[in-house]
Length: 255
Ligand SMILES: O=C(O)CCC(=O)C(=O)O
Ligand SMILES: [Fe+2]
Image (cartoon, rainbow, N blue to C red; front, top):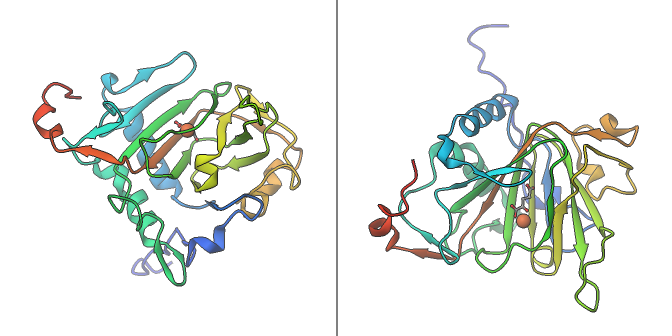
């Protein structure tokens, strides 16, 4: 190849999110299989892995980091911006995709016009997360970048009596380097969770809501996904930001 030929753009984003809407789901969820390149994935994983030890919070089966900091009473103490490696390329790319031909990007109607908080979860192969809702601290738009391994996110509905129906209503397969965006009813009315199992099974066009948008559906034609370590980056806009944060920052300082 001519050494002067510029490298081909590795990421082809859709012209709008509408092109990547998951049609089987209530309004609205979007899935972009190739959201970051392999090179970008490696660079982000390296940053996550080499973060200072004090950044990690160890739970029983998984560990997590919060950037720029933990919430205090559902409030983000506005002491530091997100580091570059979390805003580039992910936030820039999210903001560059219009919702539709006639609408701006998905955070245009959120209080800060973009995500201001990132939760990083690391799941060993058999780890998951109990069904839950994300609560009222955030604007109801969740952007999840998956790295390292595929797994299924389950969506559940509460029964009339408020109890959880243990059978998921839908399953979404998240491949490495993908972006999943969930909004609206999916945020307010449904719960989401990840099974604590070493492999996702019974994967098929019938059982996986975003099958038609997967990068490599043929990889799962035996219906199985053996899990490896998966890292997820969850981008959200925290509604309440305290300017006091910069003054209190010293008390909540993170390395
Ligand atoms: O890792 C994921 O995809 C989900 C994480 C999640 O639901 C949360 O941290 O609230
Ligand atoms: Fe969640």
